[in-house]
Length: 283
Ligand code: PRT
Ligand code: ZN
Image 1 (tube, rainbow, N blue to C red):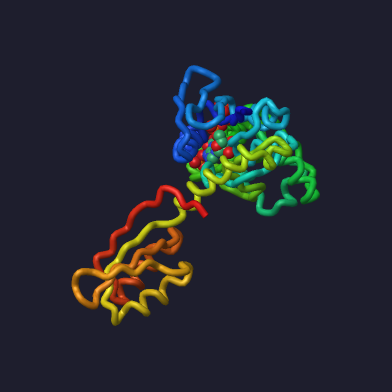
Image 2: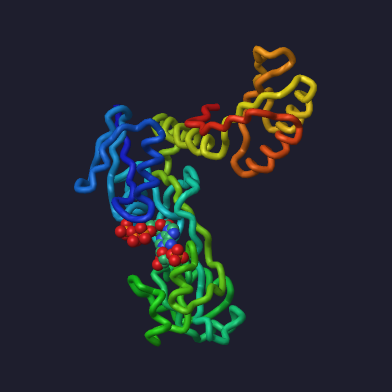
């Protein structure tokens, strides 16, 4: 049987979450820091640990079948790969930022200015779209210090908390793109059975993360009010309790409106609410 290869970041911001996701898919492997390849013992898969910048090309060229990498890196490297699944971690935005004492207020004012970045391709396309002629200065790192050193008037860099911009006296000025980690595949790999199986496992883990399993007790007088609050669920399980006229309702609640829903359920008569994490949801 064919063995798939998936490339993930060897060390850095995406490494830990990528390893965690694959382990949550039930894959068993050693997270070797020192080696490039780790075999998975219970699935025909090998994990390649690489620098994130190399992952898109490895996948495009078929050296790896799959990869986990930030969308920012895929777009910057302009590779031909298939986007298979957004993964919900490594979220950040590529932003243009200017010194906080700067008079630049509108995009037009970037005309003729120097912008330092490690993302010249994405920035170049953005400026072209906005019809702005600026001087893109490509540097390999520490972009945030370049205005202070007089090397540029603005920067274009990834931002997550905004702390780095702030501590360098910069303010975000324009959003160029937002990014998160995605699963990519060699073109055509999405039709392979093993790839489909792995995507299904990943999706079941992601779905489970978005929901909580909830068990609550309710008097039968209040049962219909409780069920009306759970419109997303086709049929919550209702189990009789030892005490007459009381039942336990088992259901799943989306993470995004969790606390609102819990307080509505309490007001409708729910008691003894127990909340549990879900490991996987297989449809
Ligand atoms: O060694 P290797 O080449 O593999 O790693 P790397 O150093 O190139 O990348 P790494 O590990 O820093 O980031 C990997 C990926 O994480 C990026 O390609 C993004 O998709 C994603 N990501 C998410 C980020 C950030 N958030 C982020 N904040 N990548 C970088 N940053 C940097 C940013 O460049 C700036 O220096 O963090 C700083 C800003 O952070 P805040 O929190 O102060 O705003
Ligand atoms: Zn990198």
